[in-house]
Length: 434
Image 1 (tube, rainbow, N blue to C red):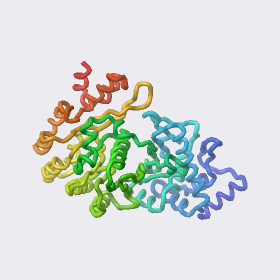
Image 2 (tube, rainbow, N blue to C red):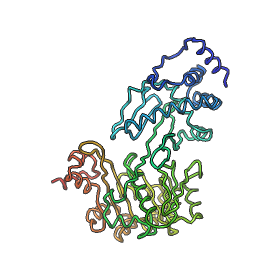
Image 3 (tube, rainbow, N blue to C red):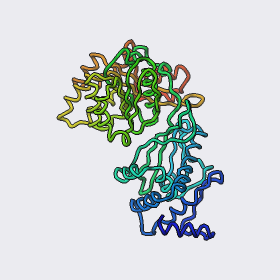
Image 4 (spheres, one colour):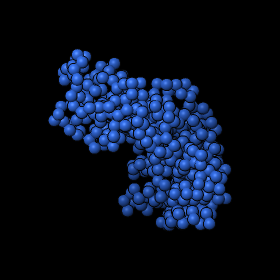
C-alpha cells in the first residue's frame, strides 16, 4: 500500500482531523468506509485531470481485498436503494450530480437527499473499486466502459440480480449510470402486436431476415427484444446466440440453447461475435446494437447467410432507422447498402414509453413490415413514401406511432397532451385527433 495512504490511516486511528474540503457523507445506516476517505485524501495537490484519476486507480488496485470489498459494498448500497425505490436508473459521481445520488423513478430523475452527499474524489474511488484491471484500462483508453454488474441477492429462479452499467469521464472526474435489468419477461402477446407481426417474429414461421427494435435510451427496446427471444425459446428447438455490450437479461435455455456472449469479456467486438457466430450453428442471432458500419455490415452478412437476426438502433422512427443505416456509409457505398438492406430487412419496431394516466408508463410503437412496395421505395431512394405505406398498412400488421398513440388516448391510457408531445408527426396527430 502507498506510504501516503498508510500515514493517513495511522492519523485517523490516532484521531487526527483530516484537512482539505469538508465532506458530507451518507447517512449512519451506510457510513462511507474510512478507506474511501483515506484514498481520496492521499491525492497529491499537484495532480489534476486524468493524472488524478490514474493515481487513484493505482491506489485502489493495491488495496487489500478486505478494503476493496468494503468499497464495493458501499456501491451496492446505492443499488439496493434503487431496488427499494423501484427506480430504473441510478446516476452518481462527477460535478454534475452535486454530490448526490440520483434515481429515475417513473421516468423522472431526481437526487435522493436522504443518502447524503459525496465529494467527487470519494465517488471516483468508489467507482474505480468496482472495475477490473482490464476494465480500468479500457476506461482510460476510451473514456468510458460498459459492463454488467451483479448484486449478491437472489432474484427470480435463484439468480443474482443483474444491472447494466457505464462509468465514464465527466469533466475530469468519473460518473456512473446503472440501469436495473428487469427480472420480468413480458409475454410477447402482451406487447399487442398485430397477429401477422407476431407470427413474423417467430422462427417457426419466418426463418430469416433482419428485425430492428429501435428507440431512444429508456424506451424499452431490451424488454421487447427479450420478449421475442423468450417466445422463440419456448416455441421450437434451436440455437440462439446473443451478443451484447453488456449482456443484460440472462435467458435460461428451454427448447433452445441460448448462448450469451458479452463484448469485452467473451469476445472483443460485435463484429467478431457476429463472424464467430457463423461457425456456431445458430438459428437466431441477437446483436445488442448496430452502432457502426462494421457491425452493420457484419449483421447484413449473417442475415444474407440465411439466419434470423434481431438488433437495436437508437432511432425514433422506422424511416429514420433505414436512413440511419444507409447514412453510416460513404456516398459511393450507399446504393449497394440500400439494395442489400432492402433485400434482408423484414421488420422495424420503433417504440416509446409514455407516462400512463394514473402512474407508470405505457408502450407506444410504430411497426413497419417489409412489402414489395417498401423494398422498392428503399431501393429507389423514396423512403419518404414509407410512412404513408405504414399508415395504410393495418391489414399487413403495420401501424404508425401516431396511430398507436391515438389508440392509447382513446383507451384512456394517455392524455391528449402526452399523445401530441410524443408524436413524431404532429400534423398527422392533429389530423387523427380532429
